[in-house]
Image 1 (tube, rainbow, N blue to C red):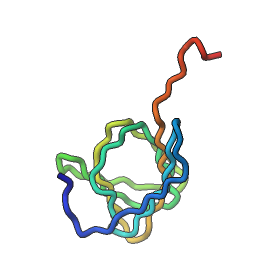
Image 2: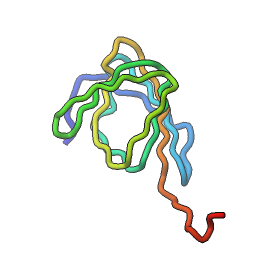
Image 3: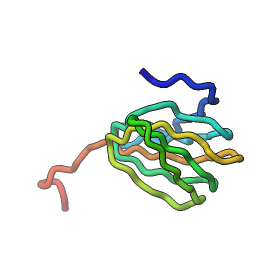
Image 4: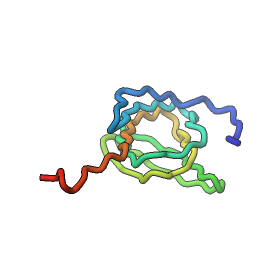
Length: 109
């Protein structure tokens, strides 16, 4: 059962969603969170602002992640966490989820 908090919710706006990718803009007010979730696809995060995120894993362990505007990073499917804006300003990033559709070898040219 997800933990119940008094934090505001991060706002996700889907910009594109098709059979290959989902692109979502996330906006986090100071202290806002995603709530615990699991990523079903590999994904890339493209920060639009600098900021600091607090990442809480299902076992309760915590890590901090510093975001730099324009400096992307990727993570594999299966990542499970709650993401919280740990800084004093709004954090904005674009998340690109890559839905698995491998090209059969006989179609690669």
